[in-house]
Amino acid sequence: MTHCNIHFRVKFFTNFSESVAVLGNVEPLGCWNAAQALHLKTNEALYPFWQTETPIKVPSGKSFEK
Image (tube, rainbow, N blue to C red; front, side, top):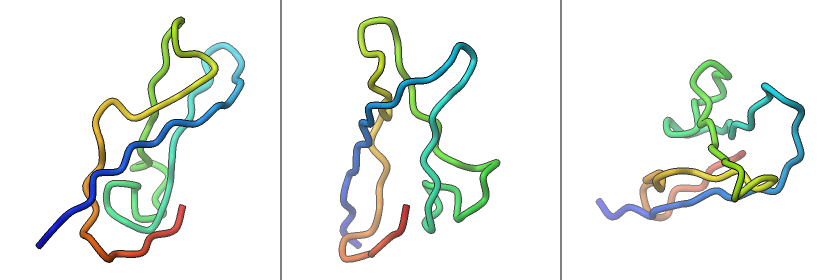
């Protein structure tokens, strides 16, 4: 089975100690379980952008919701 590699990069302003996560209907995005959401990372050089450290793999042709 062929996979697609997907990267997330979002611009989102947060307050100190807040984080950003992506939730969706496929396993890499937590299958709608917030405790399993994909948490994005940032640092001083990237902020306010948050992104995946590595791509998530989704089967080619699979539609997903986020």
